[in-house]
Image 1 (cartoon, one colour):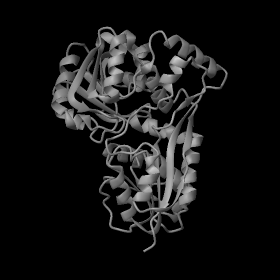
Image 2 (tube, rainbow, N blue to C red):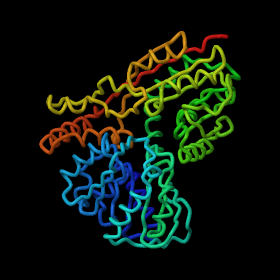
Image 3 (tube, rainbow, N blue to C red):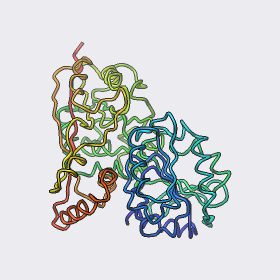
Length: 434
């Protein structure tokens, strides 16, 4: 089932002819908005970093976009507003909202008030589900409050998700919080981990780290635990894995997935901050972190990883390569190509998403570095991680450029040659022996 089919099935299960809906990830509800708009009342896109406006043209009069004052969310919603007649846009003044921002914790009252005022102008049904909590079509749901239904889909990486706003929202709505492996950041992270070249990159990282039997392994920023499950299946019970993340929602979903795949005895999911790891010195034989150091103080995180591994321990780090072009297997005019070869520029002030990773690791005291930039190929246009990438492209193109993109893209898909590749910087270093 597609996300659209799952959401439609859930709406029917909850007895909802028409419901409000809110998400950070427009791709999750794009099919619902474009093909089943009559099932949606008010629609809130809260700090989206990717957005294809075409999917929301028929519901733009019921659409509220909330964005930061700068960065990707400001850019994509500003461009979308020009193409979505009647859509509302609310700017969070003096606030940037990168994909990992904890926006509901940072601007709780402002967002809850704006959402409530906007949604009150549109009629929605109340749920008639026999249970307040359950699962349907492999989507988990929990209903709180009373009144018209407001479905809240998961954020990508926000640690608090919607929780800070729940007291305010449940005073006005029957809030239906959704989860599971087919929505939000979990779906994107799981889909990415299925890509053969992504798995090959991770296998190479582990091959170079070469965990010895009995060595404990730490994953800094485990997300949905996708890589930890791959590693547990590869190494078996020989190496206990500690998977750490600051995001309680992702940890919970990761633990559920690990149990479903029978590797929960090997993986321990714990809370923690990459800049202040909650472990004693020399606790692990190996540590790794994949696409996390873009979002924090990278130098501090490298120092912490070095601290918690034993002398002679190996540290593997992978970050997005925003200093290198991404590539689409499409023959396009130069005016389109120059827009789409630049990766989405999303990195924290002290994060790392370029070749300085290698220097930082060396200056952080690691030796015997093995460095290997890697290309990750995506070729499943029906998957959420492809949609996440393509939606960024679609937000950049003008109305005049869009037909050329769609015709070229569709022809490549029909020929079985639709794919793209984006670069990563990867390295393994060794903590010197005492």
